[in-house]
Length: 444
Image (cartoon, rainbow, N blue to C red; front, top):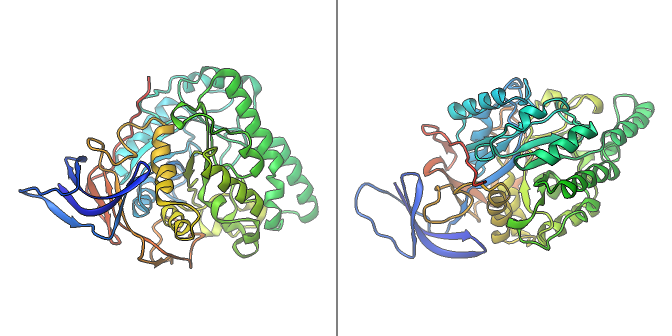
């Protein structure tokens, strides 16, 4: 049992100084002043801000089968150190998560290894529709469709399969949208010029605005036709932002979208310095694209901020363009990065909480998490806005051991992270004596 005293609570559009009592994994009381007798650990939170735990709806933790890059144990620890208390993990592992049996096997790994709360997507292919339709909406976050190939071979490009999934899915569909034919055509042009060693500056031209828009607009068209609950991941172009609306409140939207931290932080001007370390699919694009993504995020056409945390080893990343995999580790630093944007006047603390905590909970109908409310699970993050810290190889917790933020000094720090009432992280130390829980979902 914990009593947090005098924290500045950032929650549901407001900031107020109150005490919070945590008991048996949940928030029991939120009041101006709480005094409790008995066996309780009191924490002086004066001068600190208390946020709901971040919910990251898109991560790749690489287990099973790709554990030289990362695993559920290592990456969940990095998540908790970064204030992420719950995550939703992708199916492009080995074996791919494309049967209910393989999906349940991942949940068993989570139950025995994850410090954060967890859910796992059911993967779709051109030939596994029967398995996809068995997915339980109350216990699984969603169905993932790769409408463009990325890490792994899970491209779904058969029109009949796409139509059937969008028409019959019992649950939210999350899509990776890049038109495969356009990407392959562009890649051929640059391979003819440069072979495998294509300069990184051409990555956003190969995985172009056209490729992204063609695929995203197709997903939106299918969703509107079939009245599908669609969530489009990692929007990377300004043109795509025109596909989304803020005319309805988030809880009533059928089509939602996400921005990732790398598309908010980096642009194509950074390829010269960072090279393949900022190679993602879809690609980091222009300053204008970034500006338009920010505009759509702040006017609520884009609903969620996530990471697409996707570690690879340094050795893999140091390959030439065509052999260097896309993706990078981000989950330990995403909240810190957003807090830097707060210090720069780009976004308020209340909006950060809305986009990283409330909105994922609402988009996915996560039960009893994502808010600081009495009766909800105590997924909480204490932050010190005025305590800088620098990213270096000694404090990176991702298994791959590197970060695109390496060498950067963030303006704020995560002090403590509580996962279902357990203080899993405090001042640089992790406590994995109590593990995270499987997320559940309030769906019919």
